[in-house]
Length: 321
Image (tube, rainbow, N blue to C red; front, side, top):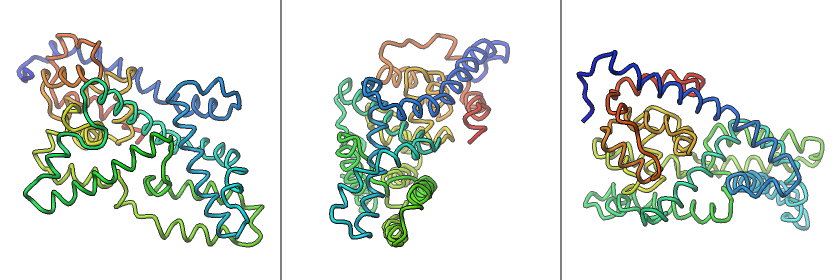
């Protein structure tokens, strides 16, 4: 356990070290949108050899394609797919200029990256983790039914991520709304028939944030109560439940929690795990599965959970959010 009797002077060095690393991590996060936006706007395919950037680009293109498909069908075009593919690059460029949407797509790409790493390093199935399997087999019918719904949703997520896609109705509500506004603004001059109005009504009618994967994950973690600590073990819960539980327990946005698993955000990850209630030994175990080549300094054990939470809350990313 963390020594809660350590003096303030003992804690100062490790806090200063982690605060500096957290500030550096915040600065890196602030550059994600501009850098990704530049890369996605560049037509040179040589810039998209990086898997993360390519995945974000694929997701943005797929979101654009779906809205244009709906428009093409509502307009009774001869080939809605051809219509959508013809116009998706221009719309994708507009979507990529929306910082929050781009950050969300990047966070999903980072979640996929962690999913693959945990599967390869710890043999955790990307769909059915040991924790989710236990929840599916629960004697409590409500828990078992909820877990089955999460299982189906996670299976779809994995299938879509393998194709670098994301159903538009899986976006958080505010981002779904902004994506539609960007689309309507982009095609405003080409909608004399009013087909976009029909398409938008259909898209909004089919959207229910509560039934999306992120909502389902949040509810099942919340329903676990104190048992949600089990979800803070990525080698037991899998990436999806782990990131969700980490966000809830450390009072962070889920996208930021997903980004914290990146190699350049280790200070944030360590602080989040501590703030979530793990002791130093448990944090080290999670680092073994997420960053196996990293050894946390001994002074890290001096940092208290409440101080870790305060440092996270004071970070520019949380203050801005």
